[in-house]
Image 1 (cartoon, rainbow, N blue to C red):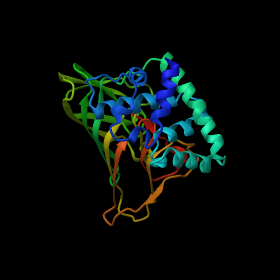
Image 2: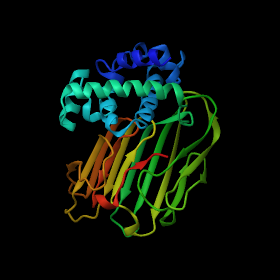
Image 3: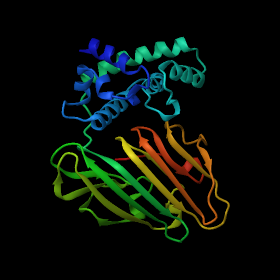
Image 4: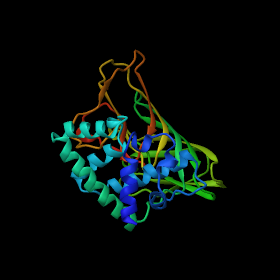
Amino acid sequence: MTTKLVHELKTLRKGRGVHAGRIVERVGPALAAACGITGSDGPVAAKQKLVTRLTELVEQLPEDLQLPARAAFGLTSEARHPLYQERVAWVAAVIDRDARTVRRRVDEAVDQLAELAATTTRRDTGGWHPAELSVAVTLDRGQPEVLERYQVVADQDGVGSLEFAPVFPVRRRDVEVHLLYGGTLRDRSGLERPGFTLVLATPLARGETHDFALRYRISHRDAMHPCVLHVPDRPCDLFDLRVRFEHDGKRIVRTFDGVLPRSDAEPGGLQQAVDRAGDVHLRFRRLLPGLVYGARWGESAVCSARRAS
C-alpha cells in the first residue's frame, strides 16, 4: 500500500501538482482510497478531497519537511509555479539551501505522507464545504459589528448540521451572536473562543447548496482585535472581505492571500490602501486548507489567524 502511495504521490507532484488539469486522471487508486475519492466524485469534489487530505497530512510532518511538501504539490499560493522544478527552486531560495537538499526533503516527505495516509484516518469535515464566504466588518461606530454570510455545498447526502466558528478573534463573552436566516443556531463555545452548530431545517442532498448568515456585535471597541485572518479547514471557492474604518485616512492595512502561518511577531503581508470612504474590499479565490487569508490593520502581537472550526 505505501509503495503504491509513494509512486502515486511522486506522479502527482509533477507539473502543476494538485492544480493540474484533468486531476481525476492524475490520482491513482491507492491515493484515491486514502483521500476518500470515489468513482462518483466529479473533478471539483475529487480535488477538494485530495487537497483537504494532503493538507492535514502535511500538517503532521516534521516542521522542516512541511514547506517542501506544500510547495511540491502546489499547496501554497506562494509557490504556484507550473513546473515541479520551479517550485523546488523557490523553496531552495526561501530556506537558503540548494535544490538537491530540497528534493531530498521532498522525497522524505513523500515517504512519510504515504505512511501517514495508510495509518491515519481522515479528518471528519462534516460532509460539506463553503462555496462562498462573505464577511463585512464595520469599525466606524462605538460598537463594532461583523456580518458573515455563507453559501455551502453538501459533499454527501444527509448533511443536517454545520459546525463553524467566526473568522475573527474574539472572546465569547465579548460578542453577541444573531442568526439572520438559514436554520437553528446552537452554541458550542468554549470559555474563550466562540463556536457554533447550525441545525438545518431539512438535511441536504449531495451537491445541494444552502445559505445562512449571522451578525456579531462586539461589546466594545477594544474587544475587537485588529484583524480578520482566516485559516480554512477545507477548500473554499471565494472569500469576500469588506472592512469599513473610521474616516481618518491613517490606516495601514496588510493583506494575506494564501500564505503559510508564521509567528505573530512577523509583520508580513502586502500593504493595501484604504479608499476615500474608509473602506477596504478584498477578494480571495480558491482558498486552500491550512493557509492564511485576510487582513490585519493593527499590531501583529495581538492578532492571530483563526481556523475555521
